[in-house]
Length: 166
Image (tube, rainbow, N blue to C red; front, side, top):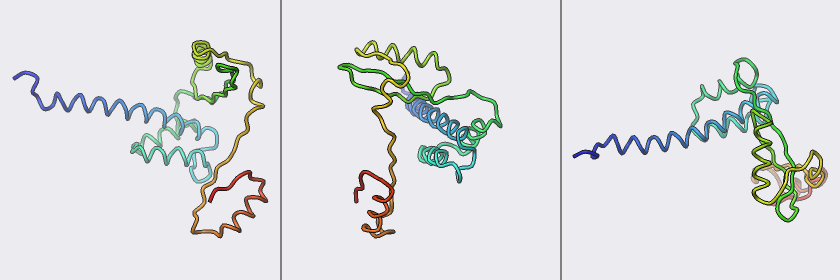
């Protein structure tokens, strides 16, 4: 009766689930660390950190992991320092591409991106070569029951927004 152990089946399923959780947790820890480094360790005053912490809570990340990531970002704990970098390039057919990446090693990341671009028929370009084609936009979600639509439209237009969807 070899191979009929209940634990053997559970072990394989658990290993797969743990690997998926680990991958998600690693990504979220990086986001929390960078957000804490950029705007401080208080989620009440740092909106990027607040969003990253809420994503971590949705993924059921333990609160001690979140606190450790915040401390690592503010410099209270030693750890790997992640940087946000932007790469610009051209894809197949001359399509402009901007890549925003989070890395602990700029040289390795740029080499990997250069390799990906060349395999797919594109090339990595210098800083400023395609960034002039892109604009950062904002997105706000407002509770519909909390405000009159006409009043909101006038506020949006006065602020210089391009679009509003009810």
